Amino acid sequence: MSKAPIRRLPRTAVLLFAVAALPAAAQEESAAPPDWYLQHNDFLARDGGVFHAENPHRSEAEPWEAYGLAWEKGPSGKTLRGRLFGLRDGEDAATFWEFFVYWHPGDRKAYVQQVGGDGTVGSATLEPLEEAGTYRSEATFFNLDGSTARIAHVSRDGGDAHATESFRWADGSWEPMRSYVWRRMARDADAAR
Image 1 (cartoon, rainbow, N blue to C red):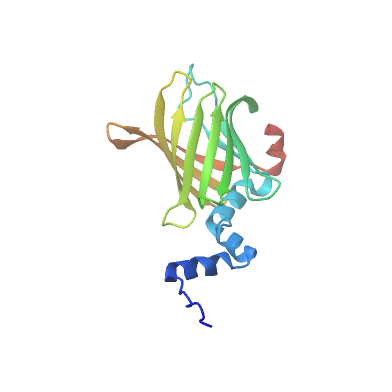
Image 2 (image 1 turned 90 degrees about the vertical axis):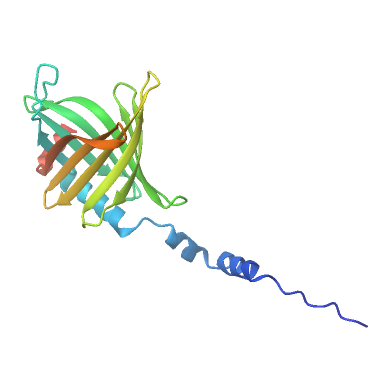
């Protein structure tokens, strides 16, 4: 009686089997949001999550004395919802953008989705830069007329301020647009939501 020869599996098959045999918790852990992402969300949502920035571009066409950002964590604590609004006479007068920030465990990337009051949609990635507390998002905006635009933001978190710089992609390079320093408001500013 002859025995069938034992066939050896290729090394790659053995490696794939070993990875598949890992406990589910170990596989999930590798797709979990990284510390930088959670820290950035914590910073934005802390103490009510409301920031105001003066509007240095105030004009008849842009009457807002200041702009506001309001952030809150989602139920899991791993997502963030926000909105950008205009202030007139110290009151919340108009919402311009709504944001949803999330970690995609399959892509292992952070994304920012935003929708403007005029129907414009922006889709961005978010990543940390070398300097701690500094982040870059790069978005493509889709307008209702079918046009698109690329906009990048660099933000710096620190203390009770959040500084942002925006850039527009034009003629093959990033051109500076606007910059703001957003100051965290006292918790009673939640009424501005």
